[in-house]
Length: 486
Image (cartoon, rainbow, N blue to C red; front, side, top):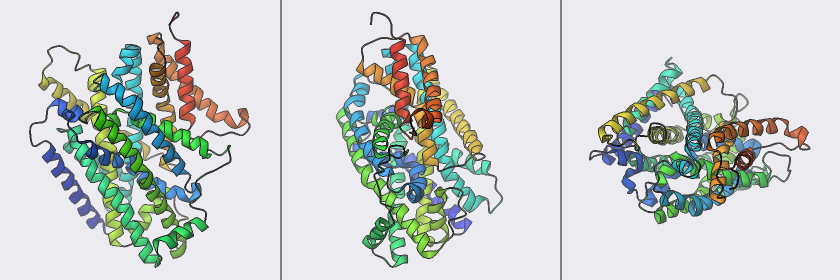
């Protein structure tokens, strides 16, 4: 594909996003529309759109490449997701709706106090800035390699272009816009996978079932790893998947803000349970794509030895080997993933900072205009910060991004897991000012344990389940600082 064709495709997709954005804010959008979509979002639209938001560029790029070394073991993680979504629907959503929350971290203030509230909000901001920046980097980097490098455009300019466009279509509508643009992004991401699979089967002159049989024969479809010392041991994968979902969806403002925009608790619960069920076949589709791509590479002999990471498999095959139809569908899916990674995050970060740190809804007599102007400035500031993080990550990229993302999530979301677990399942109070100390010590202890686990635990190595350990350290710390007599 020529760089000009790629660039034209990019602007066509962006135009579609802007049209949807314009339609969602055809009437003057207020602050309630920005924060919670006026609590009027159809649950089925939210559910479908959340598929793309959940998958993002990480799944789109990394999961197919990981099939070579990890086979289908990622699917056990996905099965754990389903259990996590059940917990969210039955425990967390009723709590959020009962308290009529805009920021889900307001619960921590009500339960423990001001310091706990700020700590929860801080860890969300840290987690989302790092995680979403990583996701967006993966996608923007492909655009840089295939288009802008050929024209001598610096990576920083490419990132700036993306952030400016995302700012323009999320500036007014916020969550009201994102609920609908997510549906477009989900459609293009799934379509890209399906079309690529069809193209591979035709080029290899195999039926779908014949390639599936070959994938099975080569061991790609192995799902359950029985060696408990392996970071992908199936029991660890399942538990990690469940808790990753609880924290990265149920305790994440970005994902919950979309759920809280539904018309009622019942609608929000239907959304989460439906969304969780759909993710199983969708992720299985990504894994089969990975197997098909590796088989295609071995059959056609295209060079994979020069890859710095397996993340390069899908873009290289689609853009250079599978033809223009595959290249275009891949690119549309890629751009969808980029937008999906950043737009919801910007809105959620703006919401949390304005409500939790600036206290805009607490100030008596503050005007709607003042709130709007403040969130405009905050929105732009977070966009600039994300841009700087992405540029910085461009200098240190060194491994498959999905592993890096979940590893970081284990350290940054762990304190949230411990705080919410203690708050929901006990009635005890804590010394609020000591909560930030516990939430700093817990990730440090988790990291040290992970670093020396092979020596301390008879060869055991931690994978994504370090999140659970981090949460347990936080939970233990909360017990240690509980108020006497409670």
